Image 1 (cartoon, one colour):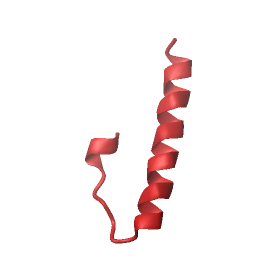
Image 2 (cartoon, one colour):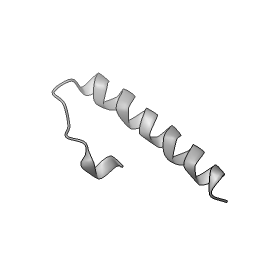
Image 3 (spheres, one colour):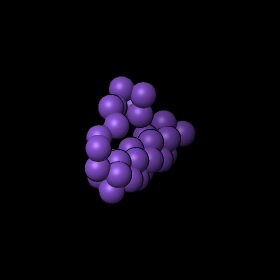
Length: 33
């Protein structure tokens, strides 16, 4: 998921996207247990 994304110029936006991706990965991990 993370590898496909390009970094944007907005560092705050990057932080938000990183957090969303992390939460998504956690939820996916919960579902696949």
